[in-house]
Image (tube, rainbow, N blue to C red; front, side):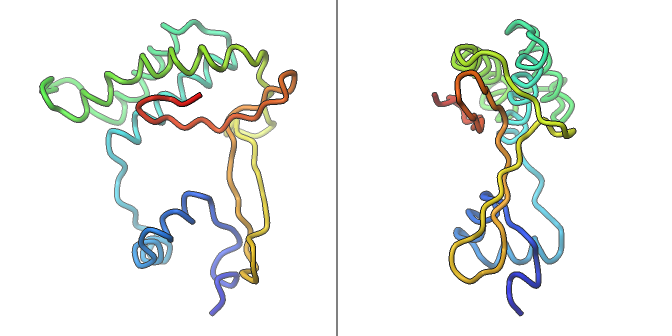
Length: 161
């Protein structure tokens, strides 16, 4: 069976997953069962939620951090945190500085353009090299037309420029 018969497209993260462990990638794709994301992934999603709200509505950093904290807290209980080496507490503590850093960078590009779909992301489609017969499909988070800039936010512990 050719890969193209199994799927229409793959994302860049799926390609990375396949390259690091083809058996895991195949088993998750076939079964649809995935390992739940941990606090680092929740931090990344929360930072993105705060920044999207700021880009779309012009909120200040404090309000963006509040939105991000609420998004993070909805995925991880913070009521009984062990504030020592608790990974949830460590990830939550990185939200505010990451938003402040990213917002400083994003502001310089001006007004963000918003796509017409519910995800507020721009879809990028490219054919895969070789004879695979599938498409590489990904999303980019922000488009700033006046600056000619496309941003795909990577919410690592230190949001890169």
